[in-house]
Length: 337
Ligand code: SF4
Image (cartoon, rainbow, N blue to C red; front, top):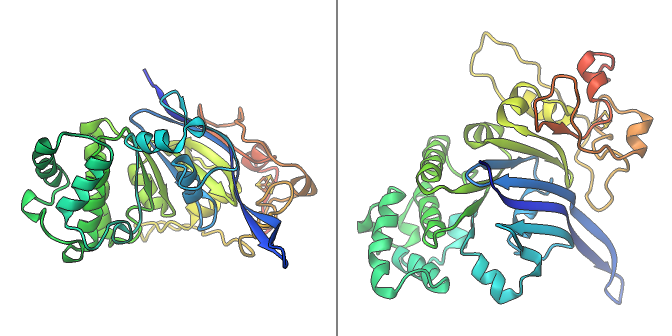
């Protein structure tokens, strides 16, 4: 039986822009605009999109590292936005995050032992006398070895530092880990090692991941389901197979067309998008993708497409936010490149 662990409803994250002599608010950066999704216990849901699409902001808003503008976030049946600061700090025991740059999120003056001990102390995880065994166990779990506990972060490689970040997240025994571009800064071979470690830990510890990344290859490796975001909105959501084998939204098709094919005998036509990503301060009306979409019509400029499924060749749970899913699928509409 699947259990919904995290539910995000109508989440908005606007950042005010102030100006003038009085420093009054003159506009907002609409980084995340009315986003809803759920994450089931034990699964990996990935959020993918170009830089600035709102994926990392969504992760930070869930943890209330930035206070959301509006919406609802329910975790394990609890309303996260109703918690006060002390309650939220306590809740972070169950909700951890692994950042892209572990070096920036780990105190360089602390040894690994101090880093792990501090995390457990803040969350009051274990009595002091039991922490040593736990730290040694954690170091073995992430493949670093207990003998490295007294080393400083600068004495480790990038991949090893990310393992310290994972050990720190695991030290408080979380239920859900938000991996925010956690392998993006690593070499490809190290990326694979860390991804495999995350998958192994998920199986062994019954973890749930919200995996935020811009690299579709990485997302394909680790996900159960995938959300594609564009300019603060979800444009497509599906299980991994449906999304990669049968994308419906023109933006997703474009992203997937850019993945290199390892077989040189197979030709793949890359779709090149026109223009740049518009500003989230003044996003396009209607469908936010209309300024770059090769299928856009006047309706796309005026009406916001809802996330929806279609009877045409879409698996259960597969939704896309496009007015013309059926017309594009049947070939009735052709791209205007
Ligand atoms: Fe393109 Fe229109 Fe569909 Fe948006 S709604 S993706 S602009 S066809």
